Image (cartoon, rainbow, N blue to C red; front, side):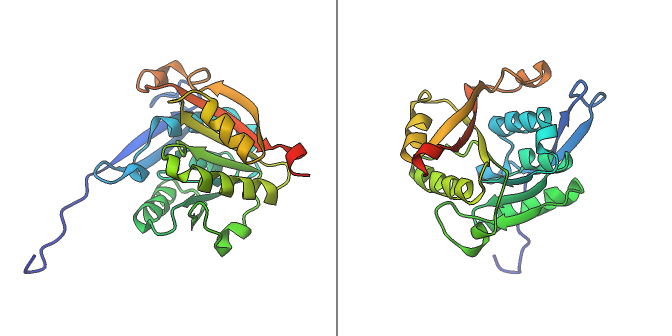
Amino acid sequence: MEGGAPAPARMTTVSRHYFGGGASECDHDLRVDIIENIEEDYGMFVWPCSVILAEYVWQQRSRFSGSKVVELGAGTSLPGLVAAKVGADVTLTDIAHNTEVLNNIRRICALNNASCTVSGLTWGDWDEPIFDLHPDIILGADVLYDSANFDNLFATVTFLLENSPGSVFITTYHNRSGHHLIEFLMVKWGLKCLKLLDGFSFLPSCKTASLQGNIQLVEIALDKEKHK
């Protein structure tokens, strides 16, 4: 537009997420604030899978304390931020060229006074940053949403698991087609399931009311028999 008219203001909001105690505004042990942009793509919104994975991190916090954690496709980064708040060394990653999402992650870290590394990491791309990652735990919330990206995602996950002996990949996903899809991907990439949970089975009742869907949580590791 002529005259250098300013761009319209973005529709951002800050959502508050509570953990521990009654997981409510007046009774909680941890609060994480997330900047969401309701006009942007899915990388700027807190999806149910993220809420469930973040709650799992909180409930497993003794396991995460002192561990190295990488979150893939972090978006608004709620699970990774909870990990950071309970004492993990966290790297938050999203698509390398998506500067809007990466900059929003940096703003969210600053808002929560969380010291995390923020890095561009595109699944299936073998750029230098991925070789420096040696996580104990890899997190991914709702990363199984686009079948065109499944192989790139699992190639990246498998590389990180191979690069970090004893590491595990924990992901939450909408079980749209049964467990067969993720079973197929695990077999294809030489991985195995360590744990499979209904995402609502460990969620506080105050959080279940606002979430919908058949969401599963799975912990995945290398199948050492196939990686000898």
